[in-house]
Length: 361
Ligand code: HPA
Ligand SMILES: [Zn+2]
View 1 (cartoon, rainbow, N blue to C red):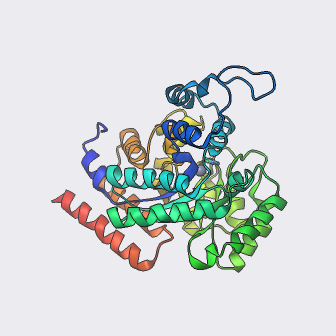
View 2: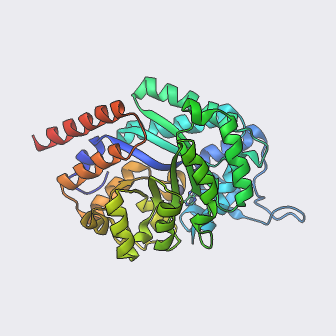
View 3: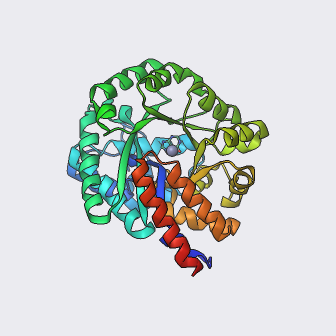
């Protein structure tokens, strides 16, 4: 519960999330439970001579949660995030993970539509087949849809800490699943470590995706400069940019985003947790609104950054005190920037207007 007079409106507003990593919804308690179930050793909580170095964070779920409040950068977070991957093995693990996220966000935040990232190379590198992630995800999505009416899509992200050649191989295997053709994969993204990894290196893969009619998005301008946001738009021809907050440092990039109507999937609590911003008030929400740059608000890795989509909406309202009209605009943009059908968008826009109308009385 936040302190804003708009809290009830912010809870009731129908929401669409475009920037949440499935693996980033793995809570410390589920991580420990799956490690025990699957017999996966975590980095030792006491030093051993030949194995990974001592990390007291893995003593208990609460010690791990406490460590998550002290991330110093994107890469510091990614170290823990990729250790978490190790406990995810079977389709039922991915199903449990997906269902926990969708049911929580549907109940607590009126989340109506989710486009969820996953990192295929983080799984295939451990011998876990892509189909385990895809079938587990869609089993949970079908159940959540029948219980809550929420829709959910899956988007694989290529990893920037692997080579472009490895990315190409991964893209080929994603095509071989048939998932882009049958709709089980809604598009392609790019994520992981950013500094010194300019987007243009992945141009060839993204051009192939475009040629096949596959939707495209990429993380850019989280830690990397505004020029990476421009490169993502101009060289990868993305429809959305994930994060994109450093675009605010370059007026020409802001103008380009506004002119092209490219949506940024902004994750305020993530920016603060990873030290891209000292407070939510430093995230350029007001700049984007004033410059006509479209954005949605998202949780990124909610199990790691202290809040789901609801907490991100509330944190923005507490920092910026937006008007009901501005929230209406954010909610409508989130629907319009989604990759669901026009029919689904119409339903969701109707729900947004009904809540806004009820609030105005
Ligand atoms: O915020 C992020 N940035 C880049 N890669 C990621 N993978 C999970 N979360 C993130
Ligand atoms: Zn992300």
